[in-house]
Image (cartoon, rainbow, N blue to C red; front, side, top):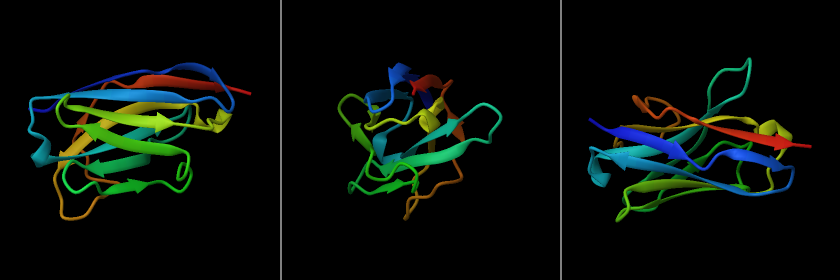
Length: 123
């Protein structure tokens, strides 16, 4: 049973950076693809980024491409989301998620979720 715990959220000004962390337990890195999602007030949860532990493949939503970077540290069983040039519209609760490893990264099909961490970007 995979367990995910996010950390690193906070309140920042527009243009600032934040790095979110997701501690992964109960799974080997080779068996899951990892993703980040976010949910703003009154909106549906949306895909942000995904990565494969093996091979370095990544996938991003158009809204964050070029600003956010997903990465993983296998030795620490931790997934990161580096967020640069933050905008007020990035304000949301950010969730780490896992899904069974697939031959191609996907923005759906994630079946394990963390509790979320709040990111607030002021203008």
